[in-house]
Image (cartoon, rainbow, N blue to C red; front, side, top):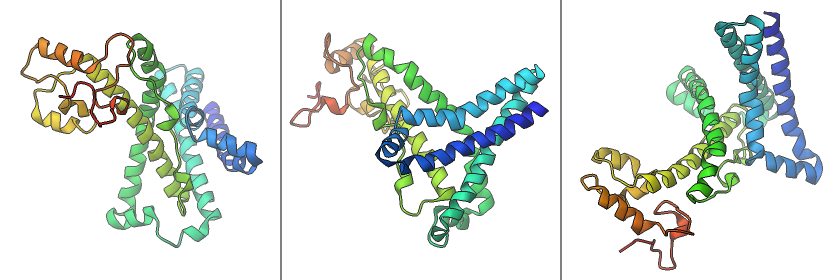
Length: 276
């Protein structure tokens, strides 16, 4: 039990110190501003996410396993690590709102949604979304580990991570405390998910350019996978149609294998290779 109490205390303090440093760094002159900008974009942002979101959970699992030597002990350690994160978040929210009290009397997202659905429902729903943090962290790790080898093995296009995985909503006027931290969470996860979807567009069109038999599924997927209407073989076709789609849309040796509607394929006339 003492190990878990120490984990909670020191974990909460470490996270609060980290949050304090994030407020201090931009005030340290040009160097501090440059470092702050780096921390707002990948890979610097990945370091921050690992520190504030992943490290406490991993530390909890390790401490719990060492202290109790059982599966349930590991879970107790994980719960303690998460509790330190929640504690830090609540303390930081209160402190940031206290330091920016002038923004609390005007329009706020949290107040508006509380009035619409009720504060209990609103806050309960927000904390439920926090359970997705490990999912997005794993997705981000896959973007580092799984996709890059494909860029040289099968010449899928490379990307600048920072153009997708970044945060900027802290610059929005009047966004403080509760609203700020949850909007930054959405800012991060939206970039991570969009980046992963872009990678999947390349993977799907390169390996499986075949429309789904379900018309409804095609309709649902065309937003994220526009090639479903831009060159995939018909669902009632055969393998010759699939091979023909590959021949029509990929350049062969020496070229990059972007998904069919990738911006890099656009010509001066606004057409893509393979268009009739």
